[in-house]
Image (cartoon, rainbow, N blue to C red; front, side, top):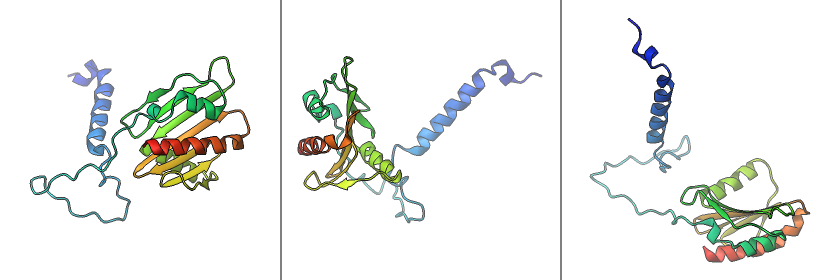
Length: 186
């Protein structure tokens, strides 16, 4: 007797893949603090849902990164004409806004990152051995690297990045000045 899977063999991989993705999504739980506990650490015993109430959310409300920096501010930092900003991932851990250079040139881009993705970007650059300079007087914590600045205000991280084919040191002061303004807006 032929296998029922042979008759529908093109569906088997699709169904199997969908089942695996569903299981992974259900198992990952969307960023639970318990899931992020480092290995070797101890967790307090879990309480049943009937004996505890959910703690209030400590996560800040989602911010649209394009509301933190205006097109004119981004253009002033880059020294180039820019297109309107485009938001991506608002409400996720990797929200960003990108202002691309005018098609007539010069090559320029300005990006704003906000939320956990901004902190992750900083962590990755640190892991890669990038050189950072601590910057005083911006938010609660600020670190500048070549053509980037990362700032923490309260529990919210944001990053600003310039892409230009110019001397990177020319963007240090404009990035710091704009980072102060953005920190005041958060």
